[in-house]
Length: 212
Length: 351
Image (cartoon, rainbow over all chains, first blue to last red):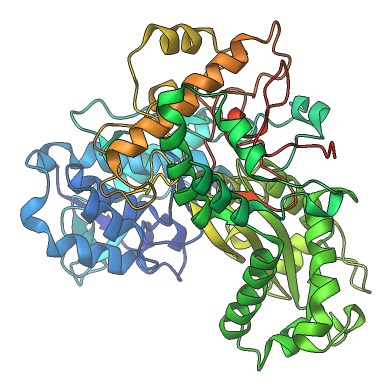
């Protein structure tokens, strides 16, 4: 993992998230209601997607993770297979997380941008009791301290929401074996209209054959 | 071969029987004689093996629907199927001659015999369980279109609220039952519903089926219980493949042919080798049929059946058949009746 600088945040000034049910809960990767469709596969949370991408050479493990209803259980299953996490994971995991968040945004634009915008200009910080890398921990003097990588990625995303037009597609990461169930992950698009070629009613001309 | 043909007749004999069609051994032999002689006996043997699994006669369809009611009764915690049905509303969104209407009519005609109730009893207590019933979900286009139409309607009761909003707040259950469901089409419906109505609506829809075609090429560990050939690397196939007209945006070309090592385990055909042989026979004959057509007006027709037009693939290759119709997503050899081809399942009654 690239070196990341530890920061100190004033609790009164930060947009802090911890539980999915509390304020800014939608920022958490565990939040429900932000489903993702990658390679035609429905994934219930960005947490499940992120965890599954640790095991790109093991479709069975990916399936076990993705088929869980609870993102917490998905994470626990991932932990059980720590020995099989792809060897370059530490070098790519921030990029993978950034990609997962971009996909979450692209396919849940209204909902997710609303949560991001609701943080105003405040520093976004994930509160944790022990994780000083992805999150920040309470120092007991009104401050939180940590590298807060997830919070920083979310601030990057908030900047995109504020300054750029809505995007519908996210390109796959340029890393070797970026796979889901043995297939290269493709551009992830908010294919609102073209999965069924809606509007193309030519089959209707052959109604006597139409069945489906 | 005649014995096998007779066994096939025994399975599919109620196909369009009510319209006066009589499928007999000669009909089956005439159909298979259009293939190379060396393949004919093999083709019937393999087809018989498949039809045992995938032909849904009228009675089998009805039994499947009743089994679904039993399961739904348990899942929604009703005391009995009769209690469930007194709270059911069936979406009826298709025209008279379409599958949904016919299947609903079949159900209504048999309600009394099965449950001792008549049609009026359905929904007599409430309409808390809304059921969308149909024979097949293939690409998912029809199911999605019908569900969307329903969800965009306002409830006729006093609240005048959109069904989509009522569903979000759990005012009713929305259940989709199709006798046959394709896993790929099902995933597409799920996604499109979410994009159209949001996650709170998507997660409230329950899907059931009796026979699942596992044809989702990017999903996990699919059975491919359909015709999905490996690339035979023949000029004949390649030449056709290059000509497929998908319109402006061509998609899924890299999934057109099955990967050699999949499915992991053969559960549908009699053996992996027989799968390859059967698939190739149907593919080659389907291309041969299409090559005789001067101009193909319907771009979603492929040798192995209809698919989404923009997909540069060979067709869904569905192997699911019912007494009342044959899906156009099945290979052309089964239903094409043009330029002298004699189909196993004629689409119109000629009798």
